[in-house]
Length: 427
Image 1 (cartoon, helix red, strand yellow):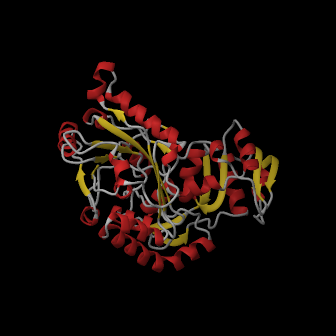
Image 2: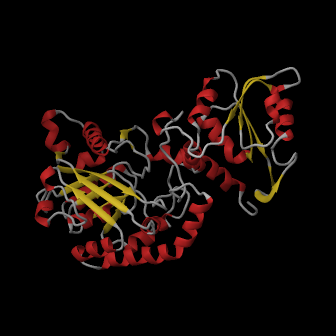
Image 3: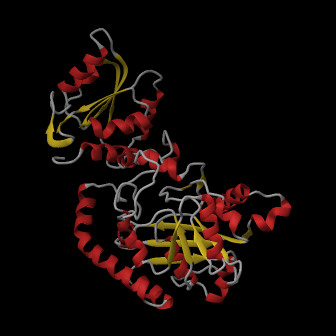
């Protein structure tokens, strides 16, 4: 950790590590830990700065005792501060100092991997978590708090073997990502799709009618796609769930024709290399509405009403602006998966998002086109508001994906992970 900024360590502890910690919670140990109604103390040899946010946020711990780090000018020195590594006697003394000489803990939970569990002498009742080859860990539905947002590029837990595999894959992954980007954006749609499929990138498309479900990597025919809406004064607006920056590009590839994408934030490099037209929202509702109306007069439009990506099986609240503009709306349920790298980031470089996704050995995209619906102008006689239509589209996509709909927004995501409102300069 020598040379790392302490602020960066704290950010990782808050936004990245909780996902891996939750995956490691033993089911049997959590039952004992959560059964206590009193104050909870946690002692660990792990640096306190790396575990405290998780323990307080997800496990409601009252006191966290861990190894302290030496810092100078906000940078880690790679050394531990006094009293040293928090193990054995150090744990005992630190806990006794907090409790006082005349107090004891009701229930203690120790780790069989530790040679010295001295702090257990301060507990009236003690349990040891045994070493197991395949321990039973908490299922997602049993998490003490839902995990909706997290950051970091790695998909798999950074164990020694997985980290080695990623390091060995990086040179090949970089070449593969560049090849996929060039082939996918420079060749005609039909040949581009077949070429990138040969490199391991899978794109599957499903239409509303089960009889038209695609079972291959090839998209359905152009005439079928155009049945959703023809070019004219009111073209089709595709409202999509947002999984990565590549969503509009993949949708355009599936339709085998160019569409226009509107985004809240995109890097200059992504705009330059994008094979489709991209237009930025100004965050001025009136101005953005006029921009969308003008674009819909010229071509079909793709919009992600969530305003930001979400990696977990949740949908953020849909902005109702799209429902006020378009007459013909086609909800599109999109999922994207990678085995090594996430194609999204909060604190990292956004211009690398697409490259990281394409660096996966076998990235996967699934698009499900749902039944088209009408916008507010068509539904005025029914008294349906834009908010009702937006919520209905969110529910349609949520049901298709098996995702839970939430009222969380882009602002909530960035406040939780980065401590800001998500208004960042492009780059």
